[in-house]
Figure (cartoon, rainbow, N blue to C red):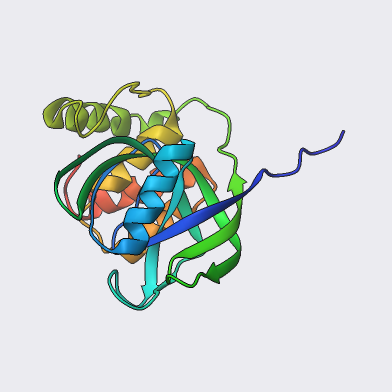
Length: 201
């Protein structure tokens, strides 16, 4: 039985000081020419760009070194009510791993990436059963603007991503949760954190 080869894409990269999870919402304010041009191309071609947490460097100025694992960002809304300032709302797509990264003449980074498949949905074990209920309470309290449907509280991967988004943890720890391929391990780590900090009985 053959294993299907991973899908490979050529995409622009947007290194940021924050993390986008699959199905998550990330608002962005763009003003640098390289990113305004990037957004225009993505909207014209209806294609995504990649969001990666910065490993070294800053969001503005010289190209930053990003972590190798990030998330596709799809533009779902835009507004340009001030000249030279573009407001985007993006929605997280698939995770990806950077295979090769380049810096273009305008300092925009582009990369050849392979998409990472998510595991199939499995039942959430009884020991982790409190986490979907917590995710549901958070989503209902925050509203659909921050957590747009579909809501998949029966899917441990979706639940883990939503909780990882809101945990009060450093971004490097959040990046580790994004990088985990084992869905139930992600939930177990989140549960342990919540119990240690007395955020969940």
